[in-house]
Image (cartoon, rainbow, N blue to C red; front, side, top):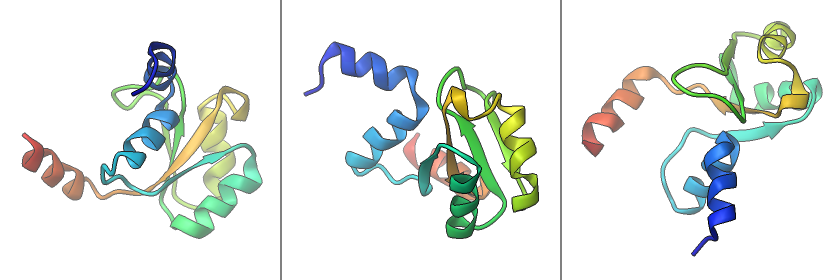
Length: 107
């Protein structure tokens, strides 16, 4: 059981949502927090490209997302989201077809 304060923190932070759902066994694309450009480059090496860069807060309906198709595009993707001081994380690219199929199965 989580406290109301923990729930509010999770609801306001997309990265914490991913961590919470992952702990519950919900299948998700691989993800990791990034704090600087070196961390973003390591994520690119680990997950490959394209790489989805995401804002931890104030992100919804595609807002707060940027795609880096190569490590050369990482700085501009990070800049488009306001930089690292706002809190960013990355997700391994998930083909839309897979996401769509999962959506159909769950509904």
